[in-house]
Length: 556
Image (cartoon, one colour):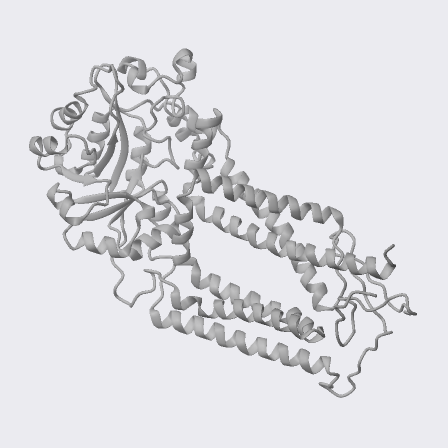
């Protein structure tokens, strides 16, 4: 049968294991929270992805962010409290409810990260790009955190009586610390550049207009994009069953029209199977007020809300005429009609007919993106700006007479952009809506971006993060020097104190039988006990306060 001291020893080991699990949970939750917060640029895509799979609209992205932030805050508070207790040499006891809370948080973080990595792996590229902006500040934060942690680490280092464990603790701490100190040597950011080398801000293309201010792919949305200062307009084109090219991003009408009310039996039918007369019967704006995809509908005044309700599905002709009127560039994806459609094989020529014969736009304003029958299109209209979504070699692009690349922002590379730019091939990146991502594109020399947030990005007068190499070197070197000085001072202080050397006159030592305080890391159950005489009931344990050393031997 185990003695009381052995039971206490086992309990102590259990609490130490829980503390280690708390640290692991904190790290994993922090990683997931950072990952998801940096993915905000694509929240709208995530929510519509879920809409397509679940059949109803809900802002899952924001809910996930709130849950992640709440769980991280909870774990961070537990960890801060535990570190404070350890800093005072107190015994840790984690209530069973918090043990369950830690396990739930750990399970959530691992599961959410695994699922998102599987269905949305490209967001890890976004995470890596974010380091090009946030790494300097993460470095300062990480070094500051290690400096704060040096206090409890130094305390326990000098109280340990096993040399092996002292060496292990100090080695781990110094390894992490020096890794943080040297991180800036391997950091790259296009926003660390010499003064005077920053190019002009990328021009802005409204992604389906201004979808934060009006329903996407509507006349109102494109008018808002022009008002917000967009130099170009982006859209998606589908051809109706009777040959009228119209604007619609999805293959069906379910998401952005009231087709479920007008044609309840054709809700999931391909948009190209509707005639133009049928399409004119649909509302293309009411969904915007009902679902509020960007949380911006409340910013509209009463007249604008009425205008939203009256939006209909626009034709390609109307879109091109609006662009011609305001002298804006246009770029569009062209969806090929399904099999059995009357325009299945003539979709390219039908679209060109609208550009040449039915609209007032100049061909030079059109960035021609469809790759199908490109050579035929060039023969029919050499003035169209041939645009490709394939980051091929320079030789291949020149052979196809490509003058612009339209790439996802994950392809962002300053080296590649410069290479294409050297042969007069400009680069457009889509879809960039967060200021930090736009700042990065600006620093990298991108010529234009497609965005949902014209009204936000247009206000940026300079990149959010911009430093010269000398300024950055000074920042990280000073951070490391100050940190090293403080950590050295903390270790000297604890070495001095543990050996009973006075720092000032009148200082005294607290003996083993003196007052002590006992704390539990229960957020609702923290108490203090003082002036208790200890007569043998309390023996040395790994976290008994006010002892010159920590005994780590199990009781016999």
